[in-house]
Length: 359
Ligand code: TRP
Figure 1 (cartoon, rainbow, N blue to C red):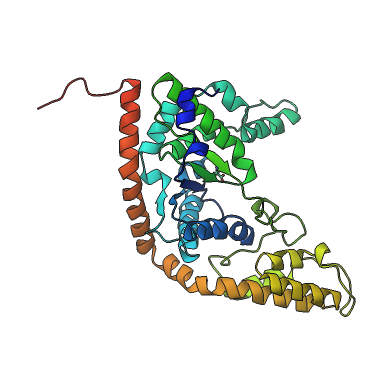
Figure 2 (spheres, helix red, strand yellow):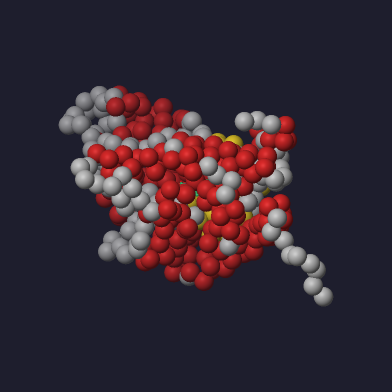
């Protein structure tokens, strides 16, 4: 439904951009995350004057992870990773979702402008139900908590709280942005046009990396190359990365045999790190029969030249959580300047306000 009121707050009709994205703090960042999310997000901010909000979505993290130690440690690792990779917390409002209590409050209000049927159609919820339905004698909702069911509403609160216009996400998240638009539209129409309708931004040019075993690099396949290595290393992070790269599967062609670069995971990952001239040169080396061992070494050198400069800062932040906490608190303070006002307006719009001025 597109009313005139909606059009007035439609982000696609707005000139100045406000970019916002959330990062779920579960798991250890790998090269696929770096190439697919971290590097492009940081670069796009560096190259523009747009306002930007990046946050750790820890209240989303607890939906699927009940291990307090994992939630706590991942928050630290992921905050340290983004800062070490060049996110400038002065330039970007960088905060932890749970430090902005107005967000879950807004989520409750938005729940009341969200049709239950809309949530029934959410991909993540439906996929969980489908898995149960395939099993005999299992309740379709077994093991599904209300957090998973209402996930898109909390995400809508994340976005609408700051009137974000552009939300960079992976393809799997596009439906959630559409739901945020839908919820905003219902609220704006019912009460007051307080919320900007956000647009999802999916970058088609961002490479999806192949993992060690030839499938897409993903935590769930256990085939990833960690960005900064395991947190409790017996071996240095650099050696860990070298070892992982040496494990990437190749075919059995011998050194000196000409090889097809477009059929090689090594070359595909190489392309994500090399300049156009280096890519052409490596193509020639494949045609000339570079051995797989040498191709792996070349890939390691290339990746390492980009990542090595970030390692010292990463280690420093991991060893000094106080500095990270200060950065996050500074971000929360900036975020709450917006969220307090937006929540106040929202509460007033729905009829929740003081009965009289006291004093
Ligand atoms: N759901 C997103 C993911 O899994 C993370 C997220 C939470 C998010 N809130 C957001 C992304 C708001 C963009 C905007 O990747």
